[in-house]
Length: 307
Image 1 (cartoon, rainbow, N blue to C red):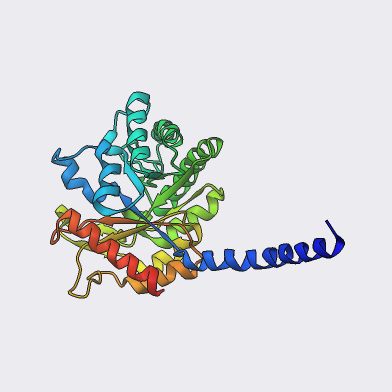
Image 2: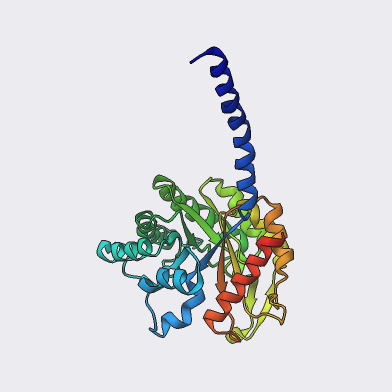
């Protein structure tokens, strides 16, 4: 190749390289600042009525709702954490429908904030198979609870210990451990943020839920007796967030959530630098589960476009 031709060719190459970052930046601008996932709890009535099973969940997420990232609830495959035959079937259905496994919500495995040492250690051990299950399914995260009985300080101290132990095991397998504001002390944003600060592990964080800020219920759960400011709580929990739970109950004629100011709360999420999954968790009674999921999805998509 002549020198002139070589330099001419190099000029095109250099120009191409110069344009590449701009193209990449343009692609980044087109991508929404958060992705939508679907929490299995949104379909809990259908699941408890045996009208579908956990194996059906990823199929329905894709085919019925057009969502390709899912969050499981262990209650719907409680005895399957070590059942590789079952888990392989679940993985096959995910693969066939191009669905990504993101998270497993863990309930009923004991209190990680128990002030009884033996009970807390048992709870820690009970969570380990679910960390292994999450790893097998290709999830990145398990959601746990920081429950316990005692004063705020006593439960906080116990929760720091329990979460640190579960987090250490999770880290050994590359799995995040996140705590949801899920009643009692955990629904106090400052309390849970303080616990996270003391745990101080990069793989232990929070799953801020927009709706779970009732700290004490009236007898027979007839309404909330003491609640925490949801917007303040989300702001306090977001620095530790590895995922977000978009709780919804009802919608007005314009498609806005009736109880939660979604633009306001999602602005808090965005300002904290969050760029992950926002999981739909519909819990309403006015719309059907399918309708509620789609209404929440439309609202989140609107926020993706406008915010």
